[in-house]
Image (cartoon, rainbow, N blue to C red; front, side, top):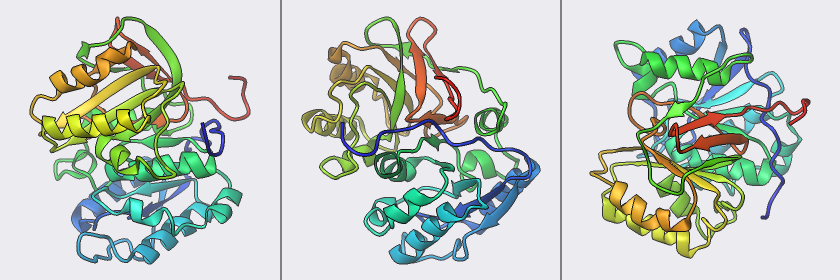
Length: 310
């Protein structure tokens, strides 16, 4: 494997910690953002926002340079305990060559939370900074910012995953489609479309010795087939020890093609986990150990602090 060796996750949150909301991808709906911000305030956090959080430039939340600068400023601020992406959409890949990775590498590691398009940042932060990040629900997304309030199971799981001393329990799926067994290994991956887009770049996923998380939204089975084939041919899935298949909202029935393309790898595969898009939406720490078990069809996160024995 190449890049910076991945380390244990940063400190989890405590009540009173300051977090900052950023928009590295698509434009943010101000009504949903206000609701999601209130959810974070109700969790006892101090919530700040990047100066141009509500900017809009077509399908982007402002210019590339502005989005990169605000992400970098939040990450390098020693008073910030977590950088929380308001939503996904598109645009995170455009920032990867604009960030000053040396400056960000000198900052104290902290939590990066986001999913969907934020997969690009998860991959880059692992590769360039050697930090574990949290793939999970975002404050301006439906599960956190619906008018009726946050989806209860999503919020409960986020609290258990995000806060120091919290426990979230295993995430259970609906099917096991690979080799039977249990595997403990770091979890990597994220949104399939983004992982395919990163193939051939310095931030391409390398699955060797890892459990791979895959999920997507609004992709027909043939497109899922094409992206899986791309990852397989690019060698991105070589050496994978297992797979976690999350939600596939508005993707028809992708299980046959997922089975066809992945089962022949001869590793445990669990499917139907509420991770990715849809409701409920559970969080997963990336680049730190997880356990998949085909008998219980579950993924259990194993958060490990840097100053404690593994």
